[in-house]
Image (cartoon, rainbow, N blue to C red; front, side, top):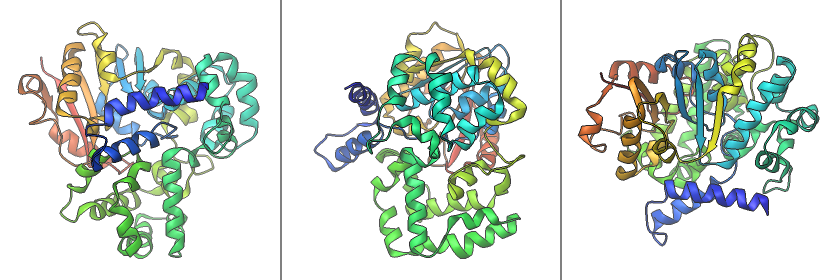
Length: 412
């Protein structure tokens, strides 16, 4: 019963954000299908590059950061920039539970090795014992119920950390399905991880991966909006993505995979390791999110208590805050889901609560910023769009799945 209540809480909040059409229409049915899919764990790992984020945000020790939580990797990684406070909000109860688990682990696990085994390797039965003995006593009742409850397959959720949590969740299932489809055509995506140079990576992409996009079944599959639910892409965002290239959705997805496969060394890109290998690469010196880097562990452990995690709608949270009280805002790609009314409500609250010089960072499925022409001029005129910087951040975002990374700075 408790698990059902958690699902209902997520479904209600996500549905309010996503559902824009009549339920009897095709668009409305797709939106409701997405809401149903989104009610469980979606992202065990967030897919926005925190290194790019922190450069764009220029976080200082007096900053109060407000961000959408997602899988929590970036929330904890922002601690390396030493902000005064971070408030992380999310509509999804699973993401809230994952963030709270990570914070408890940073605060209470004895060393980096134990912390990394739990979240970096995430495939050891010892992690379940660690949860019961060292983490459970420090978690609120709702978070305990989530991790000790069972998923739709009847598995206790905490056992995901004994069997590679990165293979679970909506995104984990999507990547697993992509691997299965590739293998049907005799291709193992892990071939990319054996490439020693960028040139070898491009050869693997062009000769092994790219031809899959021309297969009839794959072409049909990509034309179905529901096929991208596993990427956390609702119908409205699918439409924006499809319109970002004259070749349509297949050209867009091929281009994003090409960037992931060819623009960055796979040894230095943990997003590529997850996409092609379904885990972080083992061994010292391999790429991991900043919060898992041993060089940052002491800071993460000392500062994790600065994070507050809320199950909330971002605009509603901001509406309850004093004016001119926050410094940095990270919206991920949530605005791609929004109607014009929702966008204006959100930016009204951001503008009201922002201190002078505040920064807002967000991503879009398509390349352009979606704000001009949709957010009222009197609001948008108070912000400076850093276009050149945004193009640079987009090019350097190692996750490679977004068309644009956008930075706005409050004038005055």
